Length: 189
Ligand SMILES: Cc1cc2nc3c(=O)[nH]c(=O)nc-3n(C[C@H](O)[C@H](O)[C@H](O)COP(=O)(O)O)c2cc1C
Image (cartoon, rainbow, N blue to C red; front, side, top):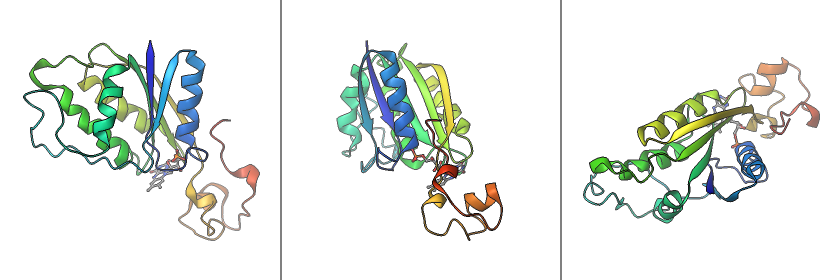
């Protein structure tokens, strides 16, 4: 059994909450796994060219092409995304749209595989889990668990979090907040 982990965060793996949770889950399985970060990858959304209809192979040449074999080779997935505007971030959404290439003429390449959906947000990542589950269902991949958590908003480290009134620190702790390390949400907790 081989598991493919995909972290859809654009942040560096050391600071990404999504990456941390996806990696923790992969390690907990005790199974053979590979973790791919989408950070820095160029993956566009499906352009509906229908170039994949005949052979179920996407013809768009970007970083999704190299992921295709990994997706086929895995028996199960742990797919994680950060919550952007109460939904999936664009990078993860683009990758999931491109699974369209597997669907034509009752293409069953992904059918029966399993998935765990991970969503991390400054408040909640539950919406991402539901989005990932929906994409999986379209490809007959069963989502067997959904894991959501609270990660650190960039407002804690942008330099203006203590004074910006639309930022997360003031929203949570109120005006006059002094940002200290112990108040920054740590997804591992
Ligand atoms: C463009 C953008 C939009 C965001 N929108 C939301 C949001 O609507 N709700 C939320 O809870 N967090 C939101 N966040 C915060 C991220 O989800 C949060 O920082 C999360 O920890 C990011 O995961 P990562 O560290 O793995 O990238 C947003 C962050 C960015 C950069």
